[in-house]
Amino acid sequence: MEILKQLLDSVDQNPDSILVVRQQTEQQMPPHQHDKAQLLLVFGGIAYLKTAEKDFYIPSSHYIWIPGKYPHNLMFNTQDLYIINIYFPEEKSDGFYNELGIYPVSKLLSEMLTFSEKWQGDYYKGSWEFQFLTTLKNLISKENLKKFSIQLPTTDDHRLNAITDHLRIQLHEKLTLENTAKQSGMSVRSLTRLFQTKLQITFIQYIKMLRIIRAMELIKDTDLNMTEITYEVGYSNIAAFSNNFHQLTNMRPTEFKAMSRI
Image 1 (cartoon, one colour):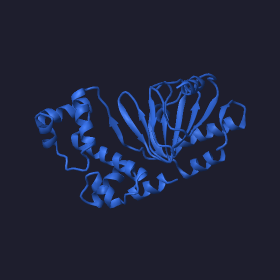
Image 2 (tube, rainbow, N blue to C red; image 1 turned 45 degrees about the vertical axis):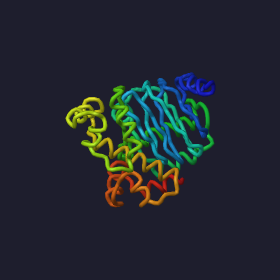
Image 3 (cartoon, rainbow, N blue to C red; image 1 turned 180 degrees about the horizontal axis):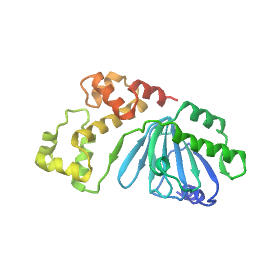
Image 4 (cartoon, one colour; image 1 turned 90 degrees about the horizontal axis):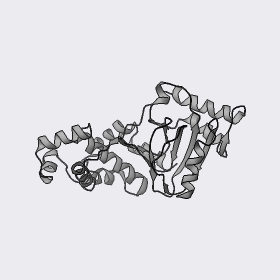
């Protein structure tokens, strides 16, 4: 924890610098925020970014842009995950840079990261490294890439958290609103209202995202084939699974598998 505290303290230590930090070890970042905006790139696994409103899932070969002063908590638990953090000085901006968002790493961005793969530490205005990293930052808003859209809303409602925890371990089964309400001792109307008021999402939408998240984990961490994964996460046929996976991730499961092996 002392190493993590030193890292967090170092982010805003030099307000005018661009700071590059590379992490390749298993760890959990505590809840925190900093003045600098953060470009967090993920390779080789799935990272989880928790905020007060939602849990964000960042798959391999994707990045998340985090505006300055945005409270968050980074978590990951796979040994082979590789993360690059680039912290940018606070400056007035609008649109893209004021919103938290997850996007795929493009070929051009990947090449720029490869070029700068040995860079670490603070870089200051006037250096060509600072200019290069500023160009990298300016690039990401110009690519007009689709956001990765799996964002699970969170709540402090104990009843609903008990229900969603139970749903996570039942994903291979046929899950219906009616059966879940019955198991929870609630009416269908009450459970529907609970999801809508506490999570601003429907029961079906929540289940769909849970299933795709679990599928991503199985693709990354197991040797199961796509048919086995399809049934393991509660789908009866591969076509429906693949279509829903694409709808939420902008990738087919096979594409995600290929990216997860990078």
